[in-house]
Length: 634
Image (cartoon, rainbow, N blue to C red; front, side, top):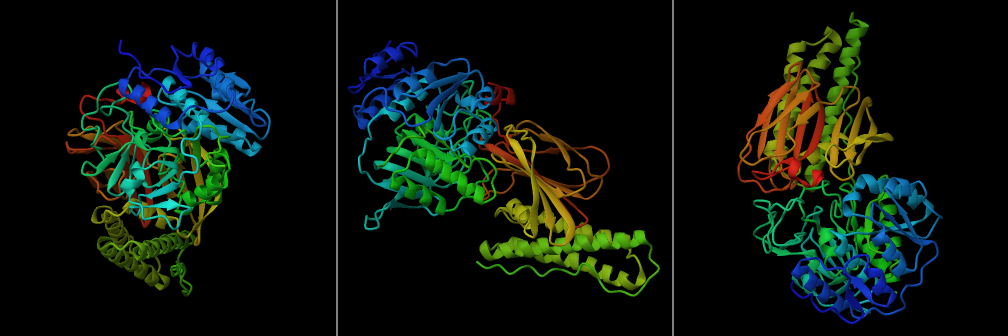
């Protein structure tokens, strides 16, 4: 057996978690060997940077601060409680722990396996502790050695007293010093290699990757991307090459020399093995394996943050507040944007102190037309009113789409909108004529409606710039939320969905939307009709046919698209088909050159000037891999 690397003074290798308390009792901070020479050497190097831990062991505890552990093994929680001088409470499950939330205020350091800290578990934890003013932090990692390493860094003295802080803005490709207006300009390459007290990253990305402009931050932990069963992923990430951007320079979170790392990317912290793409690539867990003594970041995909959010966190950190307060403020800002539940989460000690355009409203279309008395029946009047409502809502949808062109010009979208409006205006002309002649020709009216549907669905292939997002935003642009309810669990990550019931500016045209805080929109459809029932394959396999069954609608046009998460890349498999009563089996030909990532299955149903959108998350698994081999069942 190879000798373990030498640790700095004040630290020692423990045989296991049973041996660790004895070292702690002797005034030495214990570490667990990982079994990986590279990881062990990194632990030694990081602790050398932090230096010998100062202060007494155990640490003095704040008021109402406690350690809570869950699962079958209480040893990690007991070790943390002993080192931090806090009471320890162990429960077999998080559910039982939440039944006894403890005193109001203070903090909870929750020690648990990462696999048990899914968003579906963390939402009730937030609901139990946050209203009581209790700040939450997580003590976890890829494995027990990683969690014990995080505890050691929590106990270590600050590595860079008075050091500077920085922000990397991947949305613009620029980086800057925080709180030092006279500091020299900072490149992203420099920001990634300098030593910081706090490093904040604001970027497009996921739990596995963040795009920083000329560099991609990749959460690869070892020599190759692997399933949690240990199988290499063909075409996956490798050191120096990230599958999401092979042409860009690659950096890994464990190499970032920062005491505190803040990640402002969608779903930045997804700890459950099946919540995102089912492999070991994970930004937050990789950062815990490196320099940061604390990692905080967005817990969901719908936080909708702006540049003001990391700026607010930076100001709070500068003022000397604890990390639990920084995360609580992120939750408060999310609540102000209408989010229910937490927006961010902390991997680290919540008691740790790192530092002592005006849019004009779209013209409302006419929804009723003066007309002389005719011999139409009450049923015919209701039918005319229904068609008028549908075309009126379509006009508002088109106006909202047109408004998006001012922010993101797109020639393809502009042409689509022109064709869509022509079809809708032709239908409105028929309806106006019906004011004096009775019901319009239904066949001709349906032809205009189908033409509107075709052009609306054409938008999905004639423009790449976030076509689905544009449609979702436009569909609710003139609606307001009547009420919000809890929905069924997300079929991919099992997080409870949030259902919104929306009312239209036109009155009766209500909509229902459902969204998963982690996976994003689930569906958006007019209130009343039952949403489509979609049964897709569990995964996409490059070069193999992807199949799905659709039921629940008896007419209209249906567009089905498989596409990457990135809005910069179009769909790689799609079809548009006319619906008929009964189940419909569909097959999409999948190319054999796909990046193994978590992709999206979109379905858009257009029927008589109404749109319904559905989204499912599906992993792209290389040949030989099956969903049963992935992390969700590992």
